[in-house]
Image (spheres, rainbow, N blue to C red):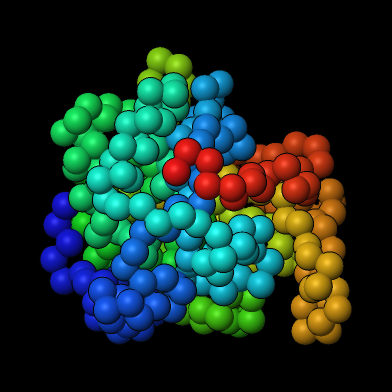
Amino acid sequence: MDGKGLTDSPCNLCPRECGAERKKGKKGYCLEDDRIFLARAALHMWEEPCISGERGSGAVFFSGCNLRCIYCQNHEIAAGRRGKQVSVERMAEIFLELQEKGAANINLVTPDHYVLQIGKALAEAKRRGLRIPVVYNGSGYEKREAIRSLSGIVDVFLTDFKYMDERIAEKYSSAPDYPSVAKAALEEMVKAAGKPVFNDEGMMTGGVIVRHLLLPGHRKNAREVIRHVYETYGDSVYISLMNQYTPFAELGKNPLYKEISRKVTKREYEAVVNYMIELGVENAFIQEGSTAQESFVPEFDCEGI
């Protein structure tokens, strides 16, 4: 792993570049210091079919996050309120244990603020026999340098692309630079992972999947995200359009966020799906039926840690 130029103390791992002295116990914008906290490591069935498959993805959920998404479904761990401390050595063991349980891959969920430790843990796990693909499951709000450092280590990038509108990026995630950052990060991911590769079971073993969670009332933003991704990369990446947005009751109490205090309608979702078809997108995942439910959020009970 070439992490040249990246440091977690003073921290410059993510676009925030908050400069926190994490090795001295200071917490960064991600709400974590350099100690590794995991909230869950278990087989996960709720990713895209080519990621979870029939065996399940070996999802490792990291505590903390560098975004402030007001609608975050994993808010308990994003805010650092759940998790158990582990060492780099223990993390490597967890990866191997998930492989033994039959996981289709190692799925690193919200990992960017631990990218240096993850690189060391993966190197150790591979030395000890880790053979399954590694999936980097992030928010899209990552530095080029961090993604570049994962080339040859991560096989699949499963990345969000939340916004093409700076105003709503600031309003909902406190990150007005999200569009420009996500564009640059995605470019680096495609360079690192290459075109989609699948094994005989139909599982993705290399490539990029770009996720977009449709927000209520924001079809235009969704169309702009999809257009950028498709016009830039064509079918060399997969697009996953999600309709599982689940609002919190608290959002409806705040007039600033009233417009997203409801679920996405079937008409809204179908309109964006139709746009994808008209645009010519072929490599895509769409969700059918009612998926806006709490079952997509696992118990962050430190299972497998």
